[in-house]
Length: 452
Image (cartoon, rainbow, N blue to C red; front, side, top):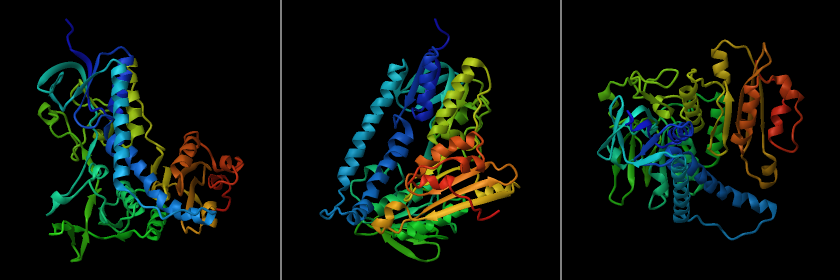
């Protein structure tokens, strides 16, 4: 009789958990996965995937308007919320089934239920205990909502994709990329949209030029930006709408309040504290370079550990961990130059250091910038603009930061991330022939520095 029922028991079937389970099974390990809510994780169900589908949907309102200048005459378009909501739900269900089949076809045992760690090598799910040589916690994050009067009326990103009705007036609270993205989504779909942030400017951590540029572009799209604004209470009125009170004494009447004020580690009820697993003050799980906790047989990866909260990072960590188990070598992950995109409108794409990060690190930099109206809008009349920026190490000529705001910024920056990873210099960019006419060619035609 085997000492353990499973070689690996994974708690959480998100991006990192599924990848680790499949790869471990491919190495001949007997693997189980338990998931109680979102097969495929946050990204598939209430994160990256549906959010980007909704960004596509919200962009059509400007597309219809822009098309007129190109000779297209069409009846006035009307947005139908149930159509978008239901088609999105169908797509997510399709993806749920794909993830389940990927696991099952890999030989992984799938449990539908919340798992709890009851010992160094034991897990309980659906009131039954299982033993495992290794336990991997990959339960991701959960939206944070502050404790204010009326918090019961707040919706989070977990809720908006399945709303029964589309609101006419929306307040989005938060200053991170999720808040900025949802403000653009609701505005594009036709809602009167307000964005509240308690500091002077959103998107903290991004390059300052990018932050200012996005602010100005969002104002053009009739999004009401409320900076240095702190919500103090939410009051439900008799007509079903909400009166949102702010610390400065002002109030705002809206039909929906969406909070995107960060995410916390989803460890509630997992039994980790009871087992003595060390958690950081913010609730994330403490792990070493091999994703091992202080309990020798328990591991954790992905958002639950507090590393960059990005799906590709969790995937890379899963692959590194399984390779570590196979070879015994350190699970090496390079967290430098991780490219990322923000699907606000226009999009943000960025990789490497911001100008501020570079200067704060003592690096002497040369800055190249280009701002222009995209070719498409020279005819459409749309006032949206594009910004591109290069941060160059003045001593080595290496490009150490690439930043963009504009259509398909994420698609463009992905390619440039490879260049940064390979150590490309500004001379490399200069010697690269551009593709004309594209916005992307601007990155290889900027010659005059604007700052150093």
